[in-house]
Image 1 (spheres, rainbow, N blue to C red):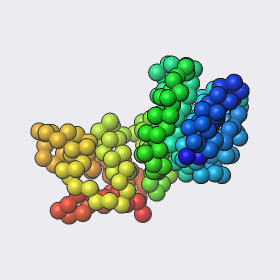
Image 2: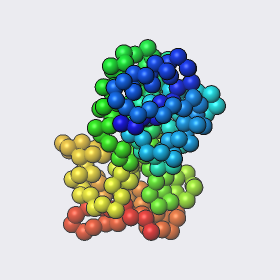
Image 3: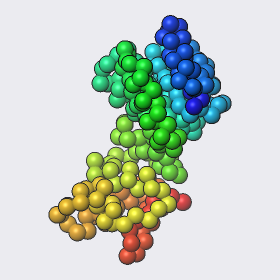
Length: 223
């Protein structure tokens, strides 16, 4: 594997690099956030080991910017801080896994192997379809740059559709993912909530968003 190691503590960086190379990996080393982002955007890495506390641009910013540039190499974040909020910030910034210092080097290798097995598939932290932008972490939705307030269930419905853009999803599938499989409420609850979302994201903007496929379900297809 070709790995980008981003660590500003020289002793730690040398130890990790030596261990990774002894395990048979090619390692590029970056000591600050700007260098890390430049390397990650320009090169094709199999995985990135990214420390959070860096000079200048921190690890959160590096990961967020990398994802916004379409870089989907698996990211394993390292930190000396074990606060839950830091882990949440890292994962919401687009990281794939998290390791708290001090750690066993064998665990780092195992986590990297697990990440590489998943592959560098696209998994954006913020969803964008046409002019609609949905941020699951901030629980915000906008269309054409204008914020739109949705209820929790409306938000969940839109998020599910945005994760399958252009795909026709059945009412049953929506029901299973947005409600639960044994939902015992109104049989037309999906249609009702699609109507709510349309009133908030179509009517005020004068542009379609959700297409009804008669007898099948719905598809998110903004014009």
